[in-house]
Length: 113
Image (cartoon, rainbow, N blue to C red; front, side, top):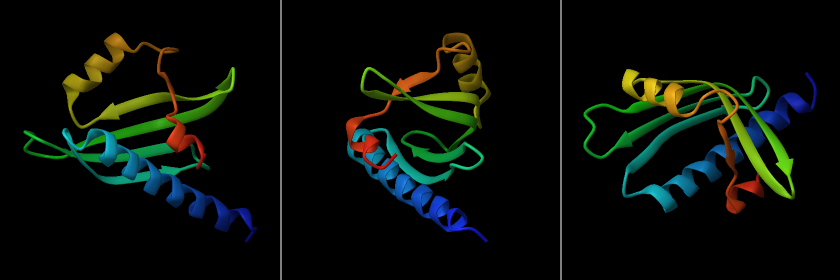
């Protein structure tokens, strides 16, 4: 077993904690993030949100992600996004077509990436 097999899970856990704290700080009016799992080796993300007014949690699965830097800013590009709500999947496919699912990483989260 290599050293990296221990480092990646620890790094993933640190990022998960940071993302959860960031979400709760900036979006607590929407509800709470109850679970996040990041696998930096497989480049996948699973999120569960308990949103106000929703009877059941919203689950989001991201089949692949990548990070890149442009002009000193870090961006995350998401692919293969699926949720537990069909209507949200339709919105994502309609309004965020392939190649347009890239988002600037907030400064507070850049430090742990």
